[in-house]
Amino acid sequence: MNENHFPIDANSDAILNLEEKIKALKGKIEAIKTKLLPFEQSLRNSIADLLIEERELTILYKAQKKAKKEKRLVQKRKGKNYKEPTGIVPVSKKEEVEKVNQKEKKRLYKEAMLYVHPDKFSMQENEQQKALETTTKLIEIYQNGSLEELEAFHAHIFGGNTALSFNKDITLVKKTTSNTTYLTNEVERLEKQLTNLLDSYTYKVLTTYKNPMSFVDELKVYYDDRIFKLRKRTRTKK
Image: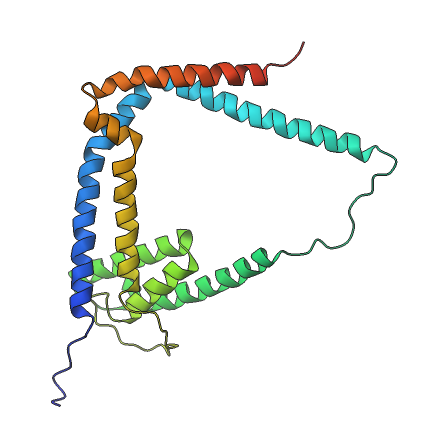
């Protein structure tokens, strides 16, 4: 084989198809949000006082419940047979797993960041922008995503799918995760987001009510009833 020619990546078509799906889904989501978000804000503006009072009463109710629980604990401690728990509190299996996962996330994040960070390379302006977009997404997944999502994006980057020509100067552990895993997960995430938007009650109101803003009357009834109940629950005895 001529050393100047390389075999075409078998995943290229799959990656392009997934990227097209992502682009189409993002377009649909943005189109819905452009109509839905201003409508939802108008609803909130119309019942702003009710929303604020409901939130304040909810917080007060939770605080009162917590205070009652603490008071009962104090009374319990005064009992003759009460004994304070002693010894080391065992760390749950879940906490141990989370600690290990967080350590692995940190390792993957650092490895990927060092590999793709735009400041590490001398690039064209468009390449710097692509690197910036990649690192921004990497930070987002590291801070808010799961270990599985970070593993998938890590494999996506090292699979050569950043549209950048990096020198692979890091010894990589071979991973079984497919290069298309991140894109597949992204398609599934966007499809779920689109479904949630289409299934949201406010979207149904917006698209089916003759006068969508009449929904404000229904919201007022709901919040008036909730506030009435919360006032009863938080009323202190004189």
